[in-house]
Amino acid sequence: MEHLINMTSTDLIKTFTSRGRRKFCRGLQQKPITFLRKLRQVKKLAKFNESITVVRTHLRNMIIVPEMIGNQIAIYNGKTFNQIEIKPDMIGHYTGEFSITYKPVKHGRPGIGATSSSKFVPLK
Image (tube, rainbow, N blue to C red; front, side, top):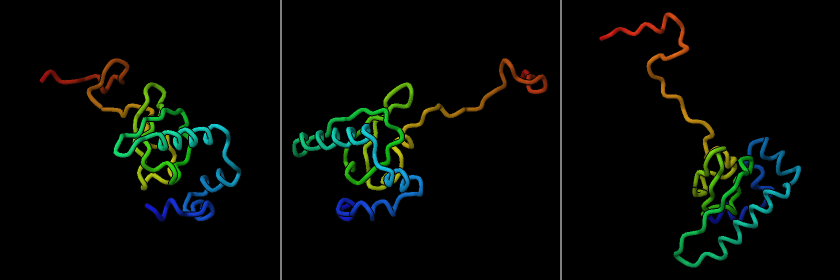
């Protein structure tokens, strides 16, 4: 844990995928910087042994960095905010990877609009 936080930015970038390296080399935009500033402020205001306030965000394309470890964030998936806690294993991943945007399909019986061959369902 301490090793990750004390890592220099060049060493950290080497651990990212090529897309993440490119994103960091080209510089961060204003929105991710503002989000990191909010996370720092919330962490600083939290008292000892007190839960950290959840920070809501729409930034699904933000790469998780070691500075964010321990924070609680709520990521928007298009309908609701999904709350997650940042852990060391998440470093280098995008925030959107932890907030799924669709409901996985649960296949059942054929219904309206099915092909004529699949419409036949025996009575028992």
